[in-house]
Length: 535
Image (tube, one colour):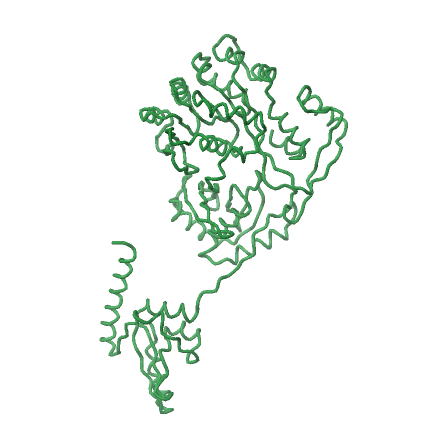
């Protein structure tokens, strides 16, 4: 039975019960289903407040104006009916009452008193020290109706381009912060009664318990309607019990498959060429490294999208699945319930995939399985936690030892960071001599760098961008595995460390994250302070 049939059956049962109730009360029963949405409304007999209070509706006034008819429900006060009959009879008028169902009453009331669309002010991110904006946003969020506050919060976070919403229980209030362009900003302080509403929504939508005394993970989705278009918002939910209640972090993934394109990542021609080489010959192992929130997933998904053709079978193993991509088989790995990437990878290799993405290499078993898969004709993409591409090699050697098979399988390691992008209101300035010498030393020998012309830029806040930044730019360090790098991996060189690997890679032409960042600062894309913060 579908939902429509179920609703009809419920209404039939309610009307039958109302008819039986009418016989008991000695009142005529009225089935309004044939006309409740079309009959003209009778105005001027009762005001909306009376209708709501007494569960009573005017039906019609006819017969020369001395005959009145009203619809009532089982919740209408009986003493009121007696009083009305007495009052109308005194004036020589007749009054009749008809019993209708509660559903019919609600439908009529929606016609008499349709819900008003309340427009709330958009949330704004306060500049540092701007307590007035925080107070205004707090007032707005505290005034939003309970049934809308959670959806409103998610919608506003998406509008601001926030990656996270942090809901934190303090002693006397709830603090809401949002991470925008990589930085966490205070947004509002909510009344404590909002906690019950928000946790209630999380419980039902993300399948987490509001009463749990253990950390929990959940997932939910929401359609965002804006500017005559709709997109899907994926939300990862993490909760943890604290002294004053459960704190929650909601990670937002604004999923639009059309945006997962390499052309939209802002890569330089050299960076793009190396990735295009991987796509042209899909085999071996490619690692993306960097901390949480550095854009690794977006880059990996963009590579997968470029590889996603009808002649390739692509499988992903993810914990959890962040984006759903048409044409790709995506498998969730529940590591918190005993699942493992290594076991999942061994299983999917039996399905003869051309490309496999492993969400993250976390242990030696997964690393060895991924390497084994990459030397048997598959392209294996994965992420790995390390500070830089050279550090990724050093960590992998610590994990599995110096391994000749690893040296022949690994093709490319990409370290990535995201920095805030300056708006057009930026202002140029010439740095002091100490800063110039630091830049000259770091970029010595880099093509295109002129040590005699060093100009940096600083942010200029505007109403639209209170910090002078809008959006983020990617900084990418790509380490190509040359014969000299392979020597470290094979074991030809003992006592391998990160510095040795980076020195050789730089000699072979690799630009480090710091160098790439400084070049962006000199080109007015970001600031020196952002590079210092991120790199």
